[in-house]
Image 1 (cartoon, one colour):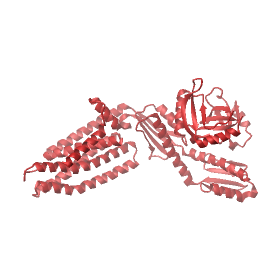
Image 2 (cartoon, rainbow, N blue to C red):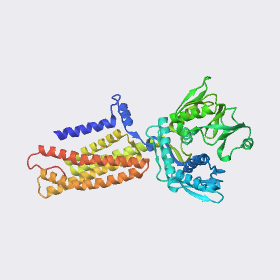
Image 3 (cartoon, one colour):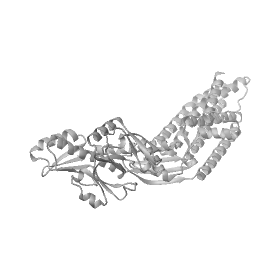
Image 4 (spheres, rainbow, N blue to C red):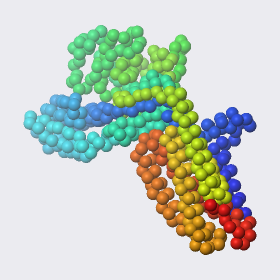
Length: 528
């Protein structure tokens, strides 16, 4: 009795996993409840498929840009300034060259560079009081990996903010520094591209000179070393278009300094975006603006000056970006909230899978599953007679448990996942065949039905466990190293195999025991 109650309880638990609590009693309510719990993957529901290349060299370049500014400042503070600190070759951003240090302070310069940068860079000396800092290969690889990981996290935050359900965003194992993005149910490829690709790096720089009407005029105005300044073009505001600015290269605040951003409207009802800085960035910004009242600041987005204004008073942690359209204000706020990408993204593959393809795949996949399951059930009934009913009941319970698992786990059902369901059905039948054939052998050897059933399950158990464990190990490997659809197949197959161990051994044995209790002593067992 307890075993029967356990089986019924398991059945109810997993039926709830499939449907939850339907909102109604009609067929449409049950269908809606099923699709709310069992999510369809990209190949069935349709959506967007992207393969992205992270330009990791840009992350390395950004790191060495910061190092250039730090080296220059530390040499200056130490009392042995260099004539120039720069990166001589854009194709090798990991190399920094220091020229013109005082000839009588060689040991001091060496000591500073070794102590501050020796763990990340290989320090080398060159003729004419020059030095080189070459980023170590392990550090380069670490920055590149962090760039990919941070890009995945940032893209995931942006996609989640768009409301896409069950997206797949992960490292693409078929390429180097690549990311796979799959968005079931999405079809607006243009907006997804804009949201993902923009680095949305908002920076606030001190204005060194400008605005200038031409780039040549801006270049001629530069009196500081070239490595200390950067050129920026005017943005979308009419008074900024066609103008050039010379800015201090190192921003006052940038990227991760932004804590929050929201779209809003200004006093004239025009769309803009407001932002809030983190506490440390706010304190730094307040200190800078307090000591630089009267100077100009430029708000720069992706190397375009969006706004330029004089510092009228100290500013702490809040600001506003004007001159934005409604869509741009919303997208910019979203991207600032979710963080800036550490490097730009290039698209290697992009495609939109239509829902008609998904509907056709569902129809054929479900048809194949139903036909296959019916054929197997009929075969078991014909070949094993009464015992075939036992196998069919176990098979149906196996399918319920499998779908219930997927409902609770929130796993996506993909076309390979449907193949996993069909394979699970085959594995379930295989287990029953092993048990039934062993029972037949025991009966032919002259044992009574109860003893034959007992020995059949006892001897087949080892073989069943062995086959299931090896298949589960293979499924785990597919899950760890496969992409989205392959993962769906691996998950479905694994859940089905665990369910099969329960149904083929525990449930099937309980049904046999219940039948034997109702039979007269010596009565034959219907097993073909």
